[in-house]
Amino acid sequence: MKILLTLTLAITYIIIMIFLLSKKDKKIELTLSNATVIVNMIIFGLVFPANYLLSLAGLSADIYIQNYELMEASDIAILYIFATLASLFFILVLKHSRSIKMFSRFDNGNNRDSSRLLLTAIALLIIGLVSNQLYLSAYGGFSNYLNFNRLLRSGINVVDNNFSFLMPLRSCVVFSSFLFALLLKKRKKKIIAASLFVVSLIFSIMVLYSNLGRLSILLYVLLLLLALFYKGKTKYVTYRSFIRIAVCSFLLVIALFFIGGILNRNDEGSLLAEFNSEITFPFQNLFVIRNKLSTFDYRYFSDIAFFPVYLLPSSIWSVKMGIKTCSSIVTAAWWGAEKGSNGVYGEMPVDFVTLSYLQLGVVGAIIVPIILAFIYHKCFLLAGKIRDDALRMFIYLFLFINVGVYSVFYCDPYLIIQRNLPLMAFAVLYAFLGIFYKKGVGNDT
Image 1: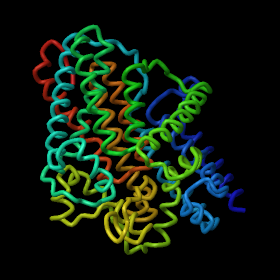
Image 2: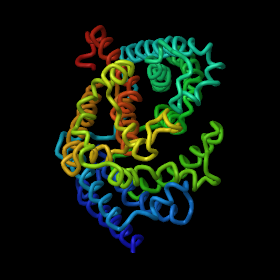
Image 3: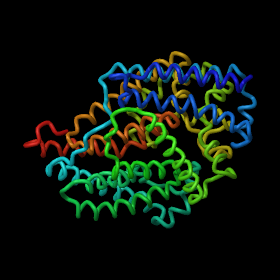
Image 4: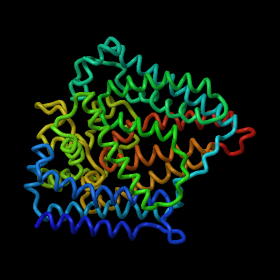
């Protein structure tokens, strides 16, 4: 009964998403709204039913299998109701806003654009290297930090680090490597770009390895390959597009398992069970939250209001202001305590649908997607002002993957801010340098 209902609701969801696709001359143009529709269609129309069936077959962590067995048909229906509401209102905002075309002719830009991009990349590299050095100094350097990183990831602070607020800025090195990779495509600055690319690549690997994030490493490899090789010529979504998505997804799953092995973070016995377990939480968060929390525990849009606050060091907003992240609430609902206390050494991420629900139930599932879609679209509009074609398309891809797709699973506002601080630093530096390069470049932004 539950399996049949799941498949029926999944098909219904896919049909609803298909009606949201925008067509031009009977073709599905590769726009931001259409790409978002396809991503949601894949996640809730295909991935969730597969995840559900594989988990019932024993290919997942025990806690996830038990939860699926406990879930009633009504719980599955409620998940789809909230997923449909959140997806629908998010996509409708994008659909009825200025169209963002996710393709380009990819020219190389002029020499002035290359100089500006190079200086921005160098500035980010320096910020990242300095932040990395200061942050690691409290632990006695990189090699000694590897003795503490697993404890820190579990929420156990064993060293009083006055530079802990610099941790996310270490990733400026990572972002700089993308920019150097883009410069390798250009006619100018190739030798300098190649030399600095190697430096940024080495330090990026060090930062990512020390952070122990499987998905972070996977996303880095994906984005780096896109920066180096993606040409952005595809204008329409075709059957070949779905074949490419399927092949790429398969390769990414294998890569994720391989990276997990290197980091010693694989918990399940097989590739399929490991991946299936990794993606289960967004489909069960709502079930756990609804059974463990009451309506009195609604967040009343505080998570959205605190977006700017998360730009400050956690010692201010967490310790002095007493703000708890949405993830800490979800973790407590799952395990009975927050990360780093009472034997809880991991944090349960909050997904897009659960974040929306936690604000104010059905009302939250409508208002939160509208607000986030507006902010998301505004970011693309700002990126659209970049004259350098290759850079503009890469920022589009970065926003779509690192903010759009990634946030379907990991949507805590605090984490969104943290993982995109390098992008914000890039935007500030690139805009600042634009003041000096404006002459002779028109409205280069």
